[in-house]
Length: 388
Length: 196
Image (cartoon, rainbow over all chains, first blue to last red; front, top):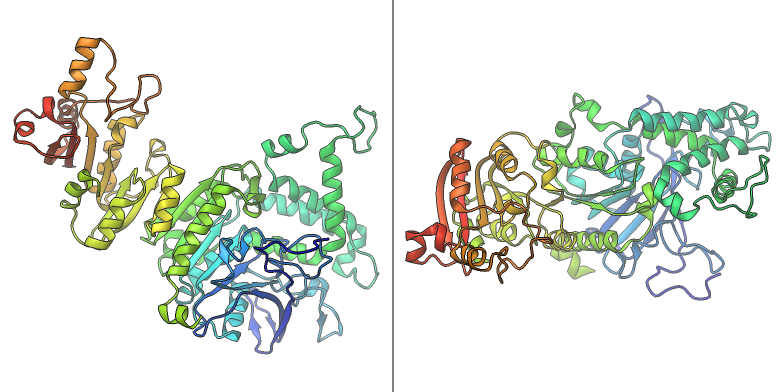
């Protein structure tokens, strides 16, 4: 329990829920007649709404980016290392919005929400969401705040994909785009891992074809397996060796199937914790959004053409030991941006934290992040700075 | 600004597209952006230099040039520049070929190993030259492919590379009349503008 929050923390934060009544047409052909987005904001929006940063979350993320919901909360928001006074996304300068995407399980409209047509939770009937759908919903969130143009759209992993989609779909509406530990589309191997995770969930007897809310049971085993698998892909071989090695919990082999290696009990702990905290239908939706992400598809599968209309400046960051979305994948984005003559910088940060590295502060990563955000701050129009 | 960069900037057409291989802290690109309204990118591997570029608003791509430039299309830059880095390349000849493929024109600068001081050092001391300008010893030097002006020009002949301009300067980047007279002996840095 933090007795007092660190100086560079945004401190106690309170989420808010915004309702949208204008129907949202979705890529799958269906629509949401109305929906709610839960968000958190940090910092102050300036008079001409030109200092706003949108932070998009990854697969299991949410709107709680930074700070604490209460004095009792033991851990701050998921990107607290990067957001706060004096941090790379400096809340003394920027107004930051984090949201839980549609289909999520942290307060925005999703599978757990009541379907107005049936009076029951949507469950598996919640429409499949895509990255462009999310960007559309985020654009309406910008409208709600009177934000014509984001100072930057920022995201890691699936969040970085949303940032890239923003640059393609709404070129006029962002000045900077930060794409961290992402890829321009998933590889067959990425999709394969997602499919194993989905199978683990859907084959859990408690999944009940997604209608598990009624039974009062959740597909814990399936979600746990999905998370354990996912977790392995977020770490690196070196990182796991460093963290767990072949350490035994009891100091010796017991010749049975109980967890004996530290890595086994770690994965079980992570999986179990996740299985009670996350919604199985949301997990399925998020993995599908990842699988379907392919902004080049609409441009004859040519990524250069997909990014050609972008107007913002780009910062792309990858991590050396990330094998889920390796540096090669980030370089595909960079190569396309260079070929399309866009303003882009690229850095490849040494880390043995694998894909998770984008969430873990590392001196070089934070230096680059801060240096780029200074540019973002410099590009806030002078009128906005005066009014701030 | 570094004096060799001062000479190079005269060869850059306003509004053109420039790639600076081994762009350092982005000094030249910043100058060219401000004074000549160029667009383009720097390529760099040094971490501090990359951060310095990002801070200045210079587009910088982290990349080891030795791994090649295959992802860049033919003739996609008006000028490709490489200052004082040719001698640290694993295969300088291949890099020059690649530069000429992706750039319509290239500017290359490198230290002249045929300078009289280097010659004297080796001739009289029998050891690899170490100087204020080239301060490394043989075992820790990043400069693995030294050449002289004559060597470079021989490469240009063999590879059918046209030398559009050549400037030879001493290490204070002054062109003295004597350097023009006897460049391979008296010039310390060569600045070449080449095309194919």
